[in-house]
Length: 173
Image 1 (spheres, rainbow, N blue to C red):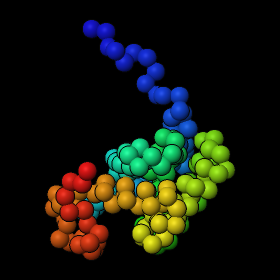
Image 2: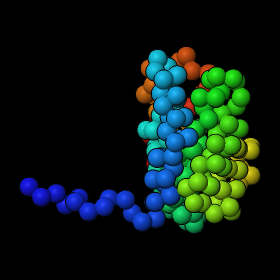
Image 3: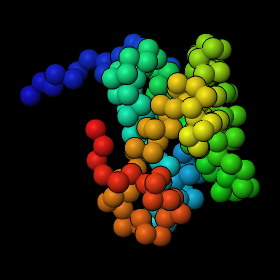
């Protein structure tokens, strides 16, 4: 049986995103995060989470007519937690380490300097709403990050250090 997917499945405008996920620094970070979070009971920072954040942010981008390109949204979503492993190792906030790693990866992936600044500012500010609201992309990334978590269905929810207000109470459309 011939598959209808025999052609190149990667849209042309997502080439930079492919460069991110195949970037050695991104791959290394994801491998280390996977090892360090292997026995983690709480939400993880794996590829599923990163893609969930990117997809939710892109939906909001479309619904609210924010005007960001798909690869800018996906760049922010994929890289917003990339420095989490360094937080586990030395305690530095992952928003800080992720921003530094993202800047290098985005540059290598061919993003324009204005896009890099926008994405890095959003990553740096994605941990709390007050900071996130400084930019449209920051607020979008913050919301997508929180909405990506299924707190209402999590077996570790009662042990989680997130406040009840921060936890996602149910499926939100």
